[in-house]
Length: 178
Image (cartoon, rainbow, N blue to C red; front, top):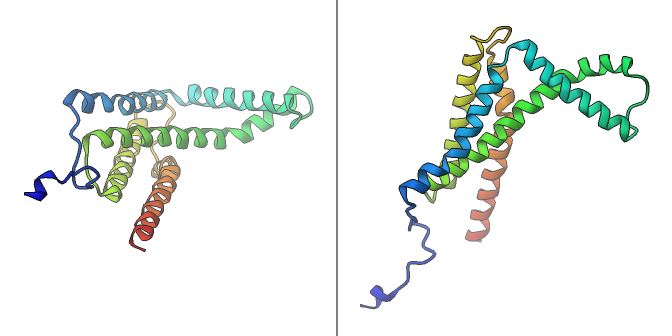
């Protein structure tokens, strides 16, 4: 009889069930980011390079205003070329990190489990598989290539974030048991 009045509030095994509409809406950010990644990947190599070079030029203009760079614009051509690869790869890692966050958000509403490790690894797996399909898609874009090394670069930041979250979760468990 006393058990009937005991509140289950705070019990980790109780899972709040969200309405179906909320579950579906929670995936909209991930769908939007996935579509944006796909759109960027559909750009032919020349257009993709021009986008990266534009970002490099903006960085150089900002750097000149902040007195990090000196000289005339003719010298910047070499710098833009040098910056192209890191700018592109940083953009890819950033895209996939945003995608990771939006997938985690969607999973939070639809994959209710107290096992944080499982949810983190599921998120990483979804992002990794999407990166693989994105590289496959690039095989059909003029001047682009699908490379597994690009999948690894895309997922590098996501993997680091996942590892940090897993270590944080493990640390929490350790302190709760101490």
